[in-house]
Length: 166
Image (cartoon, rainbow, N blue to C red; front, side, top):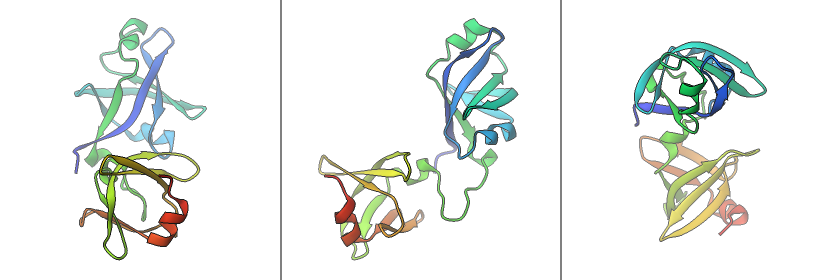
């Protein structure tokens, strides 16, 4: 498992004092209020201030004193040490832990590797096999089990073929 989790992307500077407008990748933007340090380009930065509004996070970080410094961070990702991250609820997983898992049917047929997850009303999983991409919704009835230790996601074959987009 990766040591760090991606928790957001810097969209743009906010104001003249170095504050950053961040698109959060957490379940709730308020989660940022619990973070003490974040990594920006691999460099650890102390969190100085956090405001939340309209589903966005407005963040003050050490080493970002003004708008000019903040402007240079546009498009950068923010990471958090895994041990500082809250444990996901039962039946929930960090995306980074799912990417690369084998997608198999209950009968053991390998359908491909999970390569992407798009967030929508229900998550849309993308798997790849032999250079082909297949998209399917990760809803109950399709996904039967997630086995992180076994490195696989088990799905219902019949339901998969009903909803998959090839």
